[in-house]
Image (cartoon, rainbow, N blue to C red; front, side, top):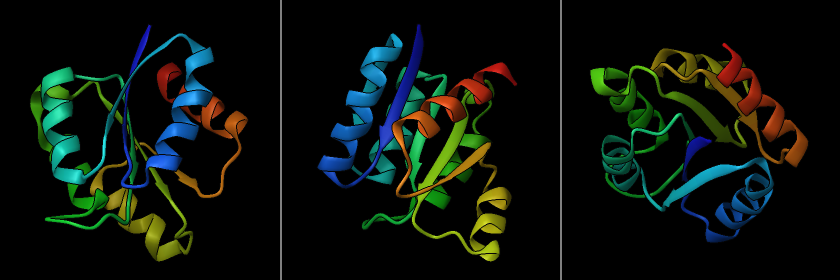
Amino acid sequence: MKKILIVEDHADIRKLIRMTLEFEHCEIHEANAAPVGVAAALQLRPDVVLLDVMMPGEYDGLEACRRIKAEPSLAHTKVMLLTARGQSQDRDAGAQAGADAYLLKPFSPLQLIETIDCLQAA
């Protein structure tokens, strides 16, 4: 069973993602801010982190991605950035932060599932 951590500040988006993944035999955890997500990742050691880029607070999703990717105990964890920003410089910033995948909002449930499956196969 895949362990997935959703880090998204909008509760309705977290709910939609959770509802999509419930049919995929996933263990789903949630966090509503980047620092909370990093702490949860350290504790849970998820297979995949679905990480919103633009979040209010101490730091954003790009910084959260950098912190997760810098942690040796999370070396197996894949990070997928979820964002409405699709310009090439935004994608480059995600790649520089260490993201394994980049999914543009709005995305379909099928796109989300397929991207997670691709990450797990890699």
